[in-house]
Length: 325
View (cartoon, rainbow, N blue to C red):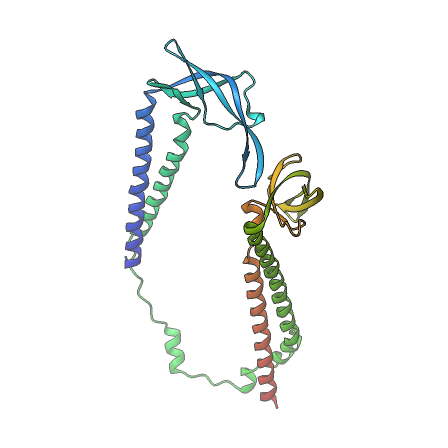
């Protein structure tokens, strides 16, 4: 077993021990705290209603924080649960299940000990993968000795003389005439590079606008007016139309995503250019950081390879014509 495989085997062994330690520690923590934790139903008395800004998609949502009454050992405790519920998540019977420790019933939570089981079993799964990697790299395989190639040795000892007609068959000229013109190949490569540059300029202009709005933009609340779906091959795109106002004038902002982030009637926070209010973007990573230079690099690389291929065909054609005459 070579040095690189030994290093990988040691790394996998270390990861196996690390993930197993996290798994055992998590399971032990759950079982040690479950004995003191009490599960009980609490009665919802009222809600604290507030508007919450979603940092991912900049939507403004109304959330409800329940104020509950917990009865334990003949005494009642009033507590505000640190949980944000949406309107469709509110329990119809005003009853919610809470968990608390016997010595502090006024500090309840809605997260039970079983809610963390999935995390620790992920650690166990990662430990198994690391162990399989250790078994894979720890197996030493003897390096196979290279067998002598008898054919090459015989060919070296017995040189073969070929006639000029056998070295360059007559079909070469016919097959080369059927190939595309080198100038056409170069033109296709230049067009692919131009398309890549177009993608790059679009992404660059979006980045410039996003940077300007982050430093100089004004925040405006908008309303999702319309949401439509469009199919592009096998991918589904959601198109959104957002209406907003600035200085008593109405404007509309259009954007699209691969996911259904909003629905008609949602309130969304926008950043607009005060000098040119038509320039707007949603204050979220999904809109302000949308687009990348990935396709620019791919298209420019493919176009450059096509251009190089055309230049090589042109040179080989010129060399063939020189040898022919």
